Amino acid sequence: MPAAAPLTTTPTVPFMDLSGLHSPLSAQLTSVWDDVLTTGRFIGGPEVERFEREWAHFCGTEHAVGVSSGTDALRLALEGLGIGSGAEVLVPTNTFVATVEAIISAGCVPRFLDVDPDTLLVTAAGVQAALSPRTAAVMVVHLYGQMPDMDAILAITRRAGIALIEDAAQAHGASWNGRRAGSWGHAGCFSFYPAKNLGALGDGGALVTNDPALAGRVRALADHGRPLGSWHEHHFVGGTSRLDALQAAVLSVKLAHLEAWNRGRQWAADRYERGLDGSSIRPLTRRPEALPVHHLLVVQADRRDDLRARLREQGIETGIHYPIPVHQQPAYSRFRTEPLPIAEAAAGRILSLPLFPHIGEAQIEQVVRAVKEAGW
Ligand SMILES: *Cc1c(COP(=O)(O)O)cnc(C)c1O
Image (cartoon, rainbow, N blue to C red):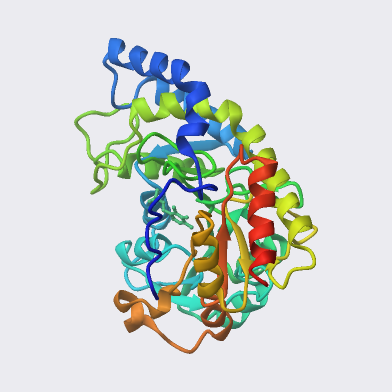
């Protein structure tokens, strides 16, 4: 897979634009950062507690626990549920590698699933077919900002008596049949990596749940095994996986804009869809039950690498999420069970077009025109 050569000049349409997103907020961000500096509460404290309340409310769950990354949220979900020691976890191969890292670092074994050809998401039928007596959990991934058929998947995991964990790292605010990402499973796991729909100014994550015991265990595991309110008693062998107060303060500021930003992404996705009508490339299908938040605008294209090069000549930045399915990555090939043809074929066809909340109409039109003029 050839790596995209960096653009030699400033892109005419950047893939994303974090400085443009932050500049209207810079006075507010500096001010909350100053407040934390003044109080000196860098670990835990009121900023973290406030953001946790706000995030649980946003997701429609009882509890949110701030942690240090999305990867840690996923690992702590498994550890907090007591799932480890070789237990099998079903996971789509079309995901960011972190989902699988978390499964393995919790001591579990990933079982890779193929995906739906139109949404590139895990399917209920795939989950059902892969269930075995060793299966302890299903980790669904709301990839690109869209949720799979959660009604059907939840019914399967309930019938089987196994855990359902949501990797919602790309789906802040997405919903399926009106119910938000993170609120369906035993645990919902979010990343606040800067480029996510809600991003910190550094690393961060959160786990949301309606289970108070799970929330308490995860909180303790993320803080050296100390239960809330305890300093010297360590009930579990934990570690350091906390959300910083500085990041929590930033996240509270940015959360006030998340819905507007998601609407900006939805508007842009609609524009792209209409604009690309009549070309040979097609965005992924949206299911009527799903309200996606378009973390990425992924299309499938023939001769994808050629198209990508043509767009780059026009100063248009694109990405590929992800060019190598996880089961084909060198580090994970030892877990490979069977070919996963849909994900394998899609990996050579997918292309992520520029998309960010404040992308302009002219920029989208420029991308659409470049696609069509290149003959796709
Ligand atoms: C970003 C991401 C993660 C990992 O989040 P970090 O905060 O970077 O650890 C996990 N899963 C998916 C699908 C992601 O996109």
